[in-house]
Image (cartoon, rainbow, N blue to C red; front, side, top):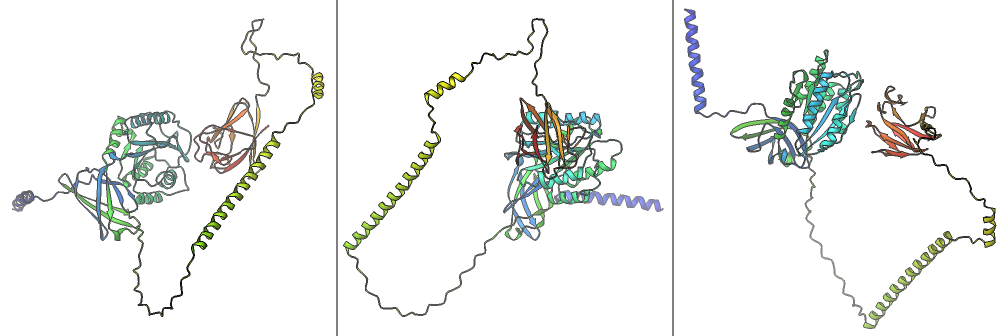
Length: 521
């Protein structure tokens, strides 16, 4: 009996469901778009802000903008591919030995595909990181530059400070520079963070919530890093970006193709109402219709700060009280003779000033000529003195011996002639601590850095010096220095060097915070 009642109820429920669906179809109920449309990035200008949307087309209609209790106007909707620079991609690669060999091969293949299949208007930068970040290239669209950087990547035995590197990157080197171009970061790492003291993950997450920049993550499994990978993938989930696991990637082209979807991003320019432009962060809701489908987007966006000049209305002036007018004085009449005398005086004064100025110039020229004449004055030597000097000169009878390298002698053997001075003693002295002095015999070149296994001259007492900071070399008795892509750069006498630079004894070299006096013995 009870079973029959249950079957009857199921039948009634089924009929009601079908009827509800039919009513929805007949009434043409609006269906909202699935949540595969995201705000990837925002930018705040002087009197507008930009919203970069992924998953929408450029053919948006019925766009409405709600900003808190105020409104905004969509001034323009266009794809990023119409910009001079469509996007800027930063590759951040963990080049520590904790990345297993098979993943390194996949990474090399992925990076090659990424730079080969980039958009013509896309700029890329390649970096590696351990304890700090090293820029292998600046932002460029030149394939050969990117190719050389990718091919030259080496993996090293080093610790990795992922959280600190990302935090410093977002606040100093990369995102601190505000610009309208869409920007993204691609992190390739095992997620391991060896630094116990530094920025916390919560601080990094809070920064990302404020900045709203996409961070794509590609994780590498090393056997015991599941938790670290989850923390790294959280960066992507927080910024509406994708995550990839190298162990699951059979063809790296699949990752490249997934990243190419960013080329379809559209940029909305929103002009807020004047009352909303107060420089604060406000909740923004954007509603639109995209090819017949309605959609909504929401985000907290920093508003422009409008500086309005408040003009004070002029206060009405009181009616002036009548002032007794004095009787007009008789106007002095200047005769034509007085006028002519005045003009004559002015002309004479101008001529006098001109003559005085010319005289001063002539005097200065004469003084300069006299000084120059004194400098090029030669002493006359008497002819008798010259003859006496010629008699005292002894004729040179010895000829200079010509030496040829690798030329056989009469006995058939080859002799090599070497410069007597093949080794120089260079001295680096810390100008702030004279006790810290390094002396090194230099024959060809030496690496200066913080890591003992990488450097000939070790400066391990200051962490602002990179593992391999710079190279000092000698050629033909001249000394040169070049930077080895150090984190803090190399300076000679206060100027940052961008290429190999000749240095001299007594020059001040700056490596990170260290200031060293360079001397040669």
